[in-house]
Length: 473
Image (tube, rainbow, N blue to C red; front, side, top):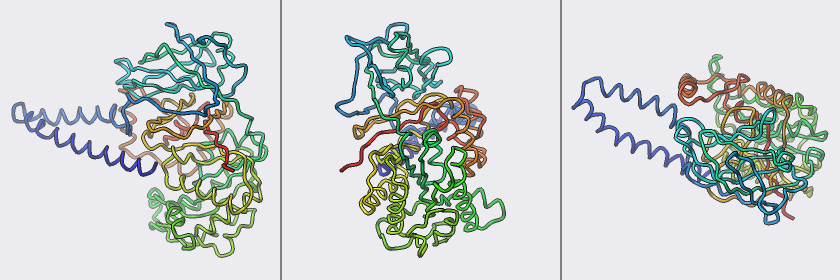
């Protein structure tokens, strides 16, 4: 998945260069045949239009269908949407019980939907939800209807497209899951804040939750250089702050510090560590090579504490010891096919090797995606709304879904948990701030007041969405 993202980025940059080459003779012609002020005015207008409508990192066509697949034994129902958007079954009754519902339906953007974000309004009154899609959308999308089964069964549920039209025929997929929050849950976070972004609602309602953070997240510490620090000292400070956050912020969600473990390995080094399991890999930016520097608040003694060496063998031994110590039945970790971040991918690989070494095998893994390869705005739309399924242009493994629904109180707590993360509080660069102002004026986009970072918009939602995948025997 990471290789695919690199290919998409290269193609995106190549297309931009081609566009600039094509635009250059047009600008020259405007200056030659028009007035001398024509080209600068056109450049300014073009730049504003780019920032308003074409600056999203969307590495696929909005006309592509999403291609999500589900297990063969999943319940599915054909449905019809009438002219008023009311949803009714075709030749069958809706299921008696299901905790997670998604509806595959063709969505076609209207004319305004090329300038303003097209979205689907679900339900009415206090239960009203909004789920946004790509501008210019014209393909199959998956709307999240979790929580609306009573309205469906009563025949009261309506879907309305704004700046878009919904197809008349649809397919409803229904999933029934146990309440995983009632089991022993371990959240694996490659970096501080990953646990809060993906699973704050889950771990805050789990009586036996543990949170394990693999890395310090010390790189890209430019903001801290403003304190008069060298590059190495700034990275060291950022690593200490994020490590502190990884062990203290979960207490806001009811997880005691004794159940939060910081392993202290170094950001963007996990892949190299696996390639040479017994070779230590120091931080790229701080130069530190002793993981014990951020482990002093751990309540669990781990194999890596002996020599503090940042090696893959120590990482696997640490995770194996934690599996034996906490004995999780459910492990929450990044989706290996959806989330392209190298450290997120390596987290899953490390877990599988640790299971083999420890002998403790959890029952199920709940997979999350905090990053995507081909759309960095997902979940799209304003904060506080539902989470539609993400872009899926290349088929994924057929997994069940579990959608945890969060109430307003939990959403407020989750936003404040993110506000406690140092890495999510750095101010926006001027260019991004200007882009947001342009999009606010011309594209009617809005951002929450809780924080400026994009994750305050993307992660504070009424749904936490997980892919359910049993561990292989």
